Image (cartoon, rainbow, N blue to C red; front, side):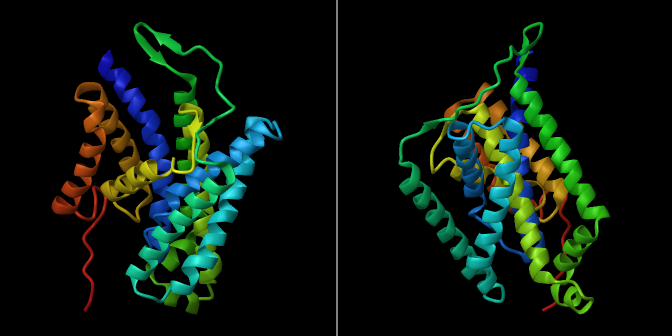
Length: 291
């Protein structure tokens, strides 16, 4: 029964990692950029929801929509200001810029909100579902259901819509896509917007489950979501989902059966093993590049 409880806990946090990992994998798939500022988009989502709930006292459904829109606009603005000028620059330049954007966002929110942690003003006041000794909190059910629904909608969007097909075309060959009449700039902006909106949702769900928010809250979940994306196969949507769930389960089992002190070390050790054994990830395929 303890094992089942740990698996449920792992799926809960894993679904949050999966939502953040989708943003990583979407951006990498289209522009081949590892956006290390993406974890801070989750932090922006948490603070925007905090303001909407504590100051304007809006319903949680409206707060979620506002958070997605605000994070989407933030992602587009970051892409236009920081990443677009470096689109043809070496990848290391864009990577260093992403780290710089991350520090800038953290310090901006540190100035605005201060360094002390804020209590998130929303919680689900419902008793957990009891199945014998097994307890399933409602936030776990809601998080898992919402994450799966968003992932399915995203997959349908990528596969069925005109914009989704344009994103796939730009990811395959940007120059050829532009020759076929696809506006690569708009497509890349939409990619950042969708990935950032999902990160905002993850920020709200994470804050409800762990109701303490502060400007550096996105660092560790962002890094773990990046590992999840690499584990599943970065650039592959199902891989991000699979990697997120696996990362959450591994972390939960480590905390339950080994030690909470070892959980982060084991998670980062998994990244090293994946890079050594199968750098393309579980669902990734080796692709030969012409020299």
